[in-house]
Image 1 (cartoon, helix red, strand yellow):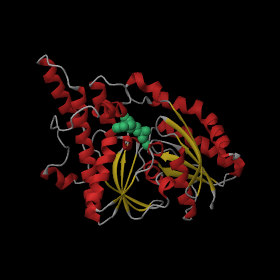
Image 2 (cartoon, helix red, strand yellow):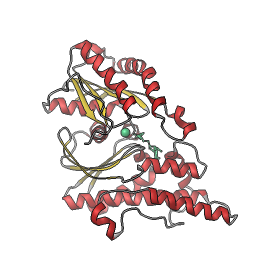
Image 3 (spheres, rainbow, N blue to C red):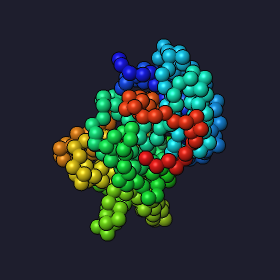
Length: 342
Ligand code: KG4
Ligand code: ZN
């Protein structure tokens, strides 16, 4: 395949990712995760994540090189997530990328983590249709994006006003006594339950909310509704139907996410929807997105789960797009920007 060989480095949260991409071809994708170190805290602890990146970075680079059958010296450009994310965690990746680029005399490209998630899809399905609407749902992010040019023109249509979708899964799982990370646990429990058992609220879908928050999301009211429902049952001394609660909660999240994503496509006259981020692993979200996109005549692109969660592959993929579209490299003074906008 054609194009420059791009090394991608990701360290914005709890995954240390290093990958090699040429064009839209993934050559190697090594990921080390500190997720289990955070499990007993019920969420990612920034200081723990930073230290884990520091320990994992060089071994993960070595693994990626071995997997690709490439030497670092073969690399034509180095791309790294420079934001948004946890500041200390980002700094480890940015410092590593600078070191490699500096030592090799190769250009450095700082890229946006959210845009990288969207770009992961090219590794499975080839060049992105542009414009496309993209829904990004992970433990840290819930964004609806209008992508006119993935390297240059990505507009935020809406985002969560409180918890991220994955965070809501993690919190509700904890409440139900299910293991961390909560998303997979709820997904599994929900398979045994009835999604129509309990009518949980759909955040920011009331007419008055739509005026100001048409494409925004809110999950904290839903979480509170689940807490109240469970507490009332407990007070009455009744058993908690965990599977039904999980299925009904999962349905509420999947319903709002897919509804707003499709409304955005219709509003902007766009026929393509791309979904990414760790929550994309959710079976109900996938099924509902497929069904509703088919009904609305929208073509849906969802990469394999491994490319939806944090990894270096998506960073290298976006780096390759930035390089091939002729953008200037970043300065070696590139900072880590924990709140970088798209
Ligand atoms: O993208 P990701 O690996 O990391 C970032 O947050 O950037 O996403 C992790 C999130 C966690 O909140 C996890 O509970 C959620 O994705 N998740 C799921 C599922 N698998 C992972 N949520 C719902 N259903 C799943 N099957
Ligand atoms: Zn992410």
